[in-house]
Image (tube, rainbow, N blue to C red; front, side, top):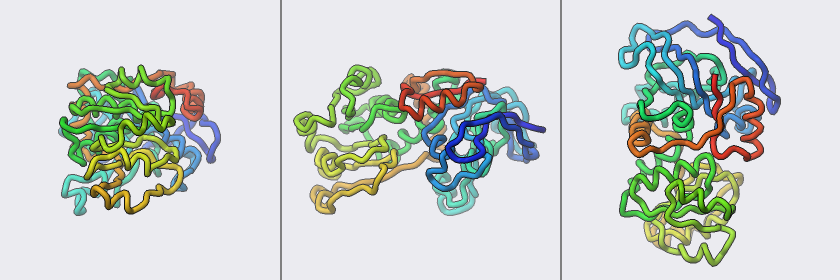
Length: 334
């Protein structure tokens, strides 16, 4: 069997039509006919080999929605015709300390959907069913696709760091990750403050769930939040005044990074010691967290704001992401 899609043959080039021979369907594998695939900034990093892990030809895509059309002999938790999703992770060893503790996303032997494998900018994909997730009926495919990477990325730290309804939380950046983080944090019951360098995003940030909006370029506005926040989630890739954000935390507050800052984060140790504050980072979540996140999103009507283009216009869609003109997630449709 051959699968058609769109791949890049060298770093930083446009994607071209591409066809590859699919692996044999294993006992735990399913074949998914892809209907939707979101475009994540990680796809851009892989196309450009920014992380020096890309292998060419590279067929990106890891926010996949589709229907199962074939299943291996050991697959009994999913069925033919079921609508499912695939995110960043396609496998793990399932026997190491992290996997046995339920943290399979932290497995050292995990594999990514489109690193060393062909991803979702294609007509179909074959992958391990144990990392394939049922999509709740209440979520539309277009809005659910970005949840499989962006959604779990912002949900996982809220769960892991025990964010509670009594807390006051901040979200830095109102973009592809940030607009979902605002929705999840509000649904957790928190009092939510959005931080952005774009004042024109205030109304939209509040529509996503923010109670308060702060223009982070205005020192007087930043000062109004000093010492008031329990948890701050940074979704941006820019270099910011991180010491200034540490000053916004209450004692024992946490500044958590899910967006990779462009340069090493510079924070004086004294700002951590005073008030027992902490900084942390968080990747995607485990399989159980993914299932939980999807059900939570369906229950609270959390969805990505998307713009849809046909798969044939993949390069146009990628350019919109590169130019930061996507508000807020691009989704390709077969």
